[in-house]
Amino acid sequence: MAEYKIAAEPRTETGKGAARRLRREDKVPGVIYGHGAEPRHVALPSYNLLMALKTSNVLISLEMGGKSELVIPKDVQRDPLRTGVLKHVDLLVVKRGEKVTVEVPIQVEGDLAPGQNLLEHTLHALPVEAEATNIPESVTVSVEGLEAGATVAAKDVKLPAGVTLAVDGEDPVLHVVSPQAEEPAAEGEAAEGEAAGDEGKSEE
Image (tube, rainbow, N blue to C red; front, side, top):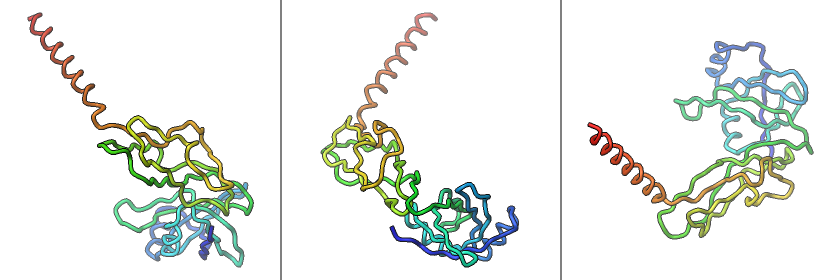
């Protein structure tokens, strides 16, 4: 997994006003924490951070004060109205060889069995444990030929070497459902409604 180098600056001002000033300067306020150290407030170049975050669970080599340390993004706040605008980021310090728990995006490949079946995602990202410098960008699940009623569990997802599940293997990841499955229930409910209406009329 490649490292993305970003130069950071320490910051002493906090609060909404200070954060807005930073964003006007094309910088993103952030906090570094982990390994029992006190949280540190930093400012990062917006463009560089945005490019780095295009990679899921990116490993960032943070350059600050002549020193370098490895971090991964744990919480990213984005502007809900302006695409590509970052509001804040939390960064977790990691060490080489250290295992961390992260959520890895699930990519689906293949075609379901012929029909109008639908694919329901129970999980969009799979919690896994991996070495900090060997976090997969995503995991792939094949749904080729699956029919209605089929379920893909966490244990069915193939993981890269050195990566293990951080959830119960029996937890469902995907379900294949038939869109017609709900129709009988709906008709049954309508029939019950009509019966209730008839009872009401007889009482009158």
